[in-house]
Length: 203
Length: 418
Image 1 (cartoon, rainbow over the protein chains, first blue to last red):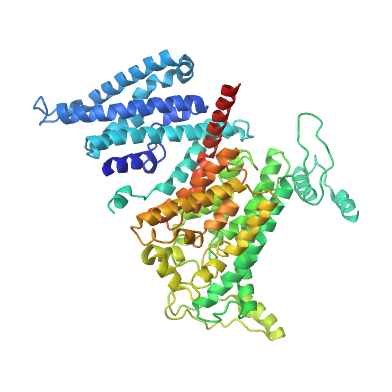
Image 2: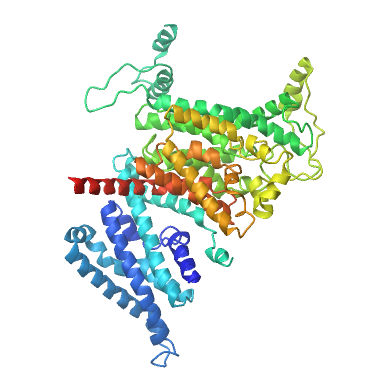
């Protein structure tokens, strides 16, 4: 249980997907112009991340390895299967969003299906493999990673809404200032780096 | 009206010398309120304009400044086990501190204001007093021995990236003074985070190291002191046996509260009055509180943020008291305000109206989380000894988000009522 919280806090704040690994930058920069759409995308990413990582954990643990159901080493199929799981999850999210909130669907545009190729999502699944998480950890990592990503995109969207009418130098308008904001946000998130929740849960 | 006539006489031509005119305008509007009026659009007329606001903050900082100057000298002589009484050799201590702080102040302000003037001219707006408070705050949050070139570099970074890129005064998202310190903190950690850099005036802080006095001390000041028959700087002074330059936070991580108290001759009262090593302006608690009261009475600073931060600090520290696993967690919660830069950050840094949350409910949340995060970083994060700067920068990042959701929440409530 403590392990679960540890991984959750770590992946949401301390090892934030965007601000310390710079994963998922494309949609982060493109969709962060208004808080409303950013919140929508953030929720979508939490959902997709939270489902795909545990599912991928199950797949790689029970199907792909030699000790699994098929009894042969299928790890070379890892990428393709992970992508397939992610794509089907995204398809599901897309259908739900289109049905529930057509306005959000329109404002997200191409970036909703593009969650499929969002590096944070695939990166999360691959981190889960390389860090050899167990199942509860994989669930925590999926939820935490998604929430960290959502927090970062909502925060930058709020900042970009605040500076919408600022007199920003012409060459920096749009993406330029977004990159500067991202860098400074990364610096701000460094304040939590070094906290090791596991060390304190021992007491 | 001699002064205004003088100003009218030296006014440079706007088209021929645009840069000179910008400079002139900056100084002119500093002395006189310009009499041209805006003719279109909605605007608020208030005697409390940006300039008065900034001036009040600077006035509130003066006590901390004077004490900081004196304390640099005091700590310097403490290291040599000379003049342990606080008011002994006051002339030496005061002028020692003055020689330390003047270059820091000049570099911070010349670089910052220079950039401000340049951008005002380049981007065609009037010079705004945005740097006035920042330039006064920066020396107070630096260790006394900060190399001046690092300081200059940090100010350039903070002003250009943190402010001008965002559109100038009042548009920045992060506190400029804290960005300056943050830059030094991450780019040149050895000159700011070490445990032993806070006592000034020695090449190294080892026992037996000699005080390095320059011509200013032994030449100029000693001659002047000689005329009055005062004490003089003694160039043969060395760091005495048993000296350690560690700051209270450095000691606290190992020895807990007892370790901190036993380190200073008068225990808690030294910590309270500020006779401890630390950043220049952060040590004296009563004088910071004095400045804080002044800011509250003049309504420059928001009491919601201050109270929120105090509550956040206290609650988090009480919770950690119950946990009590490390020596740092066992420090009684009320003493968390006595060590490090807690009060200075709450009073002068967190309340910066530009970078803080601007809705009333948002201010409570903003303040509370600053206190919470600062204590979490200070106590739970082994990587950094102190958390206030990092906590405030972190909450600056989230302040627009807090505001957005506070407003949305309010709109929803009003719609329901309608």
